[in-house]
Length: 332
Image (tube, rainbow, N blue to C red; front, side, top):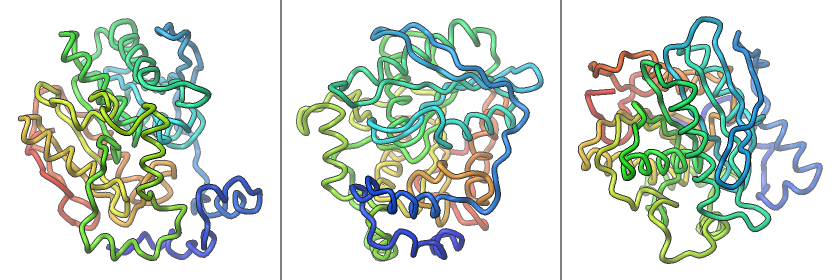
């Protein structure tokens, strides 16, 4: 499918822009105009509260989203940002958490883990996420019917790392993992030639070059070799995990990581359901449900949360009936 029409008609705003250009006010203004959606998002009826929970490196800020009716499910959510960016106010944190709380009737906790800046490196971000996860699992949602762990991009890697810690430490695990366009491998596998051709016309600020990916990894871990398996957990043994939903962005240089992770999970006897967000670039959850594919992506996760803990057959279709990318389980 071509790039989403709404995004395609606004690509001229990004012509020639690179990530370093965003330091310039005019470039930031153009980027902000590109990120403006066709309709204003209105927060659903959920109660929002900021608080701090204890962590091994000091207090960890979290933001809770409580639905209007008593919640029988709970989610810990970790935003993306290449391990070095993002906060609780970005749409990938705030909009996603509020929408999942409302759509699934779930208590959602968004975690403001320490970023890999100012000398902070691995394992600090995963330590913060795991601390927030154990707090939710044991103190806030101990009696919930289903407790899920999820995140986007680098946040998906952190969520997966927390699940692997629970498995290795024989702690009570998550019931479900929700991973949006995960950045789980280094090196990232190559895109197929068809997708390379389709993405050739995208502006640089919508792409991840080899240098960009190496910078994110070295900034996060401090090196490019002998990486801890937990840092980019696609390198870790993946057996013994709960069912996983993997959201894949179609026009994404990191897409091969999401697709490889889905294949690895399947090979590890983990139940996997994937969804291809057709026409969407990496980070499309940083937009709002005003875009139909963002709406469908949120429903892909909310549907998993609404399901009973008993495994049921799950259909897996992309936009307009397109099959999902990657291996598909018949279980969610």
